[in-house]
Image 1: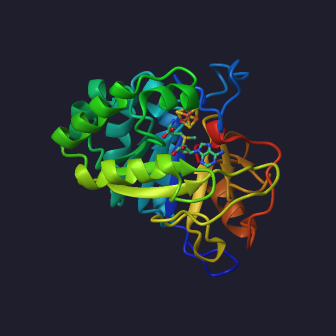
Image 2: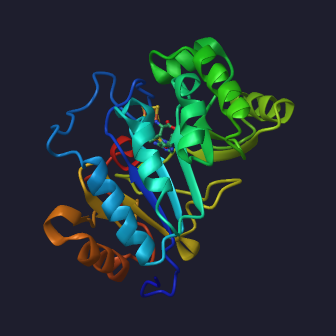
Length: 266
Ligand code: SAM
Ligand code: SF4
């Protein structure tokens, strides 16, 4: 489907939960967040039904994200439901990787093709500081498990303050070279202040080329990460929400005062 600016919207990112087992300093407050109630969160059949409608309207690429997608109970069953939708050419997930050693194999057999794993440093102490709790060895084991399961290409998302020449980013770059992993550098963004930039090594952040729609875990369809506009898929119905999101997708991002990375999923 085309939007008003002739951009082909073929990429749907689905946040499957607002919950997370880490508390990254740039993403969540230390005390956690006010979580959506159980009934607010979309069911698997709603997510799959909406995805089917999106695919009928031209979506070919789907990414599951969160919060942390692997803390959503039964995530493998959801992956299977989505992978069975005819027309999806690329099915991926963004994860912090800490639980991947438990899930990599079953996710692959359920039809997940590939994963992006977030890693901003390879120093265990700094990792603990950034995530406020995480054990970096869980991520390393998750990376190994994803490789053995055949979740390729495996990409690393590295959040940087300003540039990939920072010490931590340079070490993550070396780690990726040594382990044959692709890397994308994401400059730390601020939704409220409207600070966003192009993802180095990826496709995000360039408004003229943006092909994305985002579905939050409580059923809001968002045509732009850096804008408050959203359409409730339960109230409007899937088809109408998709049409409105495509029609109202702004030419360029500005600010988003109503959301955070943990509920949109980046
Ligand atoms: N929990 C998963 C993870 O961390 O990969 C998926 C959700 S997370 C919100 C998705 C991506 O957004 C991660 O790569 C994370 O590093 C990135 N992210 C979170 N907050 C950010 C911020 N303020 N600026 C830029 N990227 C951010
Ligand atoms: Fe959790 Fe991902 Fe946000 Fe870190 S970036 S707090 S892992 S959702």
